[in-house]
Amino acid sequence: MPLQIVRQDITRMQVDAIVNAANPQLAQGGGVCGAIFTAAGAPQMEQACAALAPIAVGEAVITPGFALPARHVIHTSGPVHSQYSPQRSEQLLRSAYINSLQLAHEQGCASIAFPLISSGIYGYPKEQALQVARDSILEFLQAQDDELDVYLVVFDKSAFQLSQSLLGRVASYIDEHLVEEIEDLHGRFARSRQVIGVTEEPANTEFSRYPRYGSKEWPQPMLELGEPFEVHLLRLIREKNMTEVEVYKRANISRKLFSKIRSGKGYVPGKRTILALAVALELDLEQTACLLGHAGFALASNQRFDVIIKHFIELRSYNIFEINEVLFQFDQALLGC
Image (cartoon, rainbow, N blue to C red; front, top):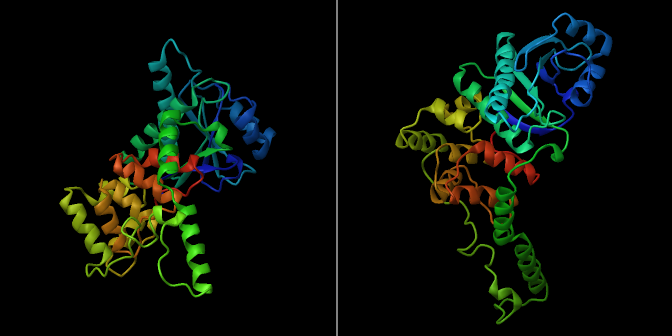
């Protein structure tokens, strides 16, 4: 998956390069910067940085990772947020991401992990910092032929904020549409009736006002569909007048995985990958259900993950990275491979 959000200590990331949100003097600081110096071995990192300092805001330089799992550390200085010149602050923050990515590309890195630059003591509002990070990374990835796996690393969710109106809207939708407790009640009630040998439908029970599992209000099992999954997918791509490259990049899946899917050798991807492809193709709910059905899956009303995806598709909101950010906030798996 080319861009992922992960909750982890960045000093433990098994990647080719991690990014240090540095100060222009490249001196050991607090927070993420201090943790990186300590984990790498402060004396060696201080010596390596001293030879490169100072750097301009938005510039990026590279050192060895020393004792870190990562081979390299890319040091970049993000801007101090200014409410008086927000456009300049955004430009400098974008430069910090783009220059770091370009340096990783030049060094032949296949993977890189970022913190949320400038969102700590530099005062950049976290919601805006996240948007700049996402847009900058995607701009770079879309322009590259070579693949680079990029991780946006947060230590805990308090360091990662989304629009409260967006989260509130999704939470309300979940409350209205998630029915796992009702399904469980139906199931237990039905099993108890089987145990005592009652087979006819009860009249006027508390359960009768809820949709029953397996009824038309619930996801139906997959129909027998003669068209193989990859054939159906490629036909959809043609009908949407999209290129395969455009689709797998918008789906946030790797070229290698997409090639495996389209090979015609019977490989069927997982549900999250299929839903990522549905989002990339901007399918409606019926088309999404059909695509899932070709692989033996369905959207379920008793799964929080599925309900969140359904909400975005109903709104025709197909930004996969915004969807993944919401999934992350609700402790769900992300779309993609």
